[in-house]
Amino acid sequence: MLRFGPRARALLERARRPLTMLAIGAVLATPASAFIMREDAAGASPGTAARTSAGASGSGSMGSALSSAELAEARMTLGLSKLYSVPVGVAIQIQKAATTEGISPRLAFGLVHTESAFRRTAVSHVGAIGYTQVMPGTARYLKPGTTRSDLFDAETNLHLGLRYLKGLIERYGGDVRLALTAYNRGPGIVDRALKRGRNPENGYATKVLADPATSRQGTARARRATAPDAVRAGASRGTSVCGRPSGRAPGTATARASTRTRRLPNPSVAGSHRGTERHRRRAQAGAADARRHRSPASPAQSPNETPISRAVRTAS
Image 1 (tube, rainbow, N blue to C red):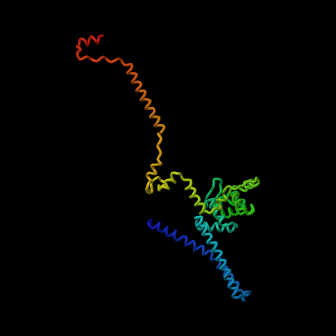
Image 2: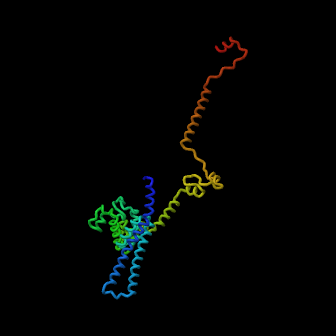
Image 3: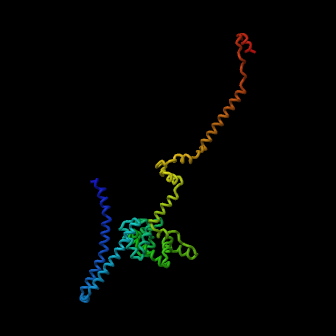
């Protein structure tokens, strides 16, 4: 039974995206079908019994145009889901909330990406909660009676956060960058900076409005640019990051040998060597002093000396 578990999960993951696409198509096709049915019912009523064939064709074209608009919206949602690497269900929630609150879907996705990285249960160190990092006080101002636990609901959080952003955009005369800066820093700080003639932006608006694909490429380039010189030099001459050669090229050994530098002695070891030399010199000086103060050596014994003469010499 356990052997078939990974295979079943792989088949489920493979089939989940097509099933999701079919579900989205069914949801989007329902309003168009209802619209066509209403038009047909209106055509069958007594007041419009004399509808011409041209009017019928116009009704059909209107229904198809509505379906095309909804399909275009579905394609945009799927594109944003792929661009930001988020599940289709989350993308549909953000798209729906943005449309309801009058916010551009692209702006809504950038806001959620920057604020919470699409984590529904994210909580900041100051207490901001959810996808759009709404403060409980702001939520109660926008919707009285909202509790802290309500902000963990995806729909509630998205609607309140995007509603707050919409109000800031209207407050600053449609300036999206100022509105995003006020969303991050607070309207009071932005108003004081503007009153003093200063630019209140802190880079937050640029981050929200940036293309995620371009920002990821820029991050990768920045990491390569800030890599240590040794790593970049090793990569240029065919050496892996861990220092092992990935392939020996002609002249590589000579180039590495030419770049070697003389290793300096360890100061602690050099000090111990100096101490040993000092002790050796002191020992030599002490030996010399001992030789100078030692009693003179006895004269060499003559080969013809007799025991009596040796005794007399020793006694004298």
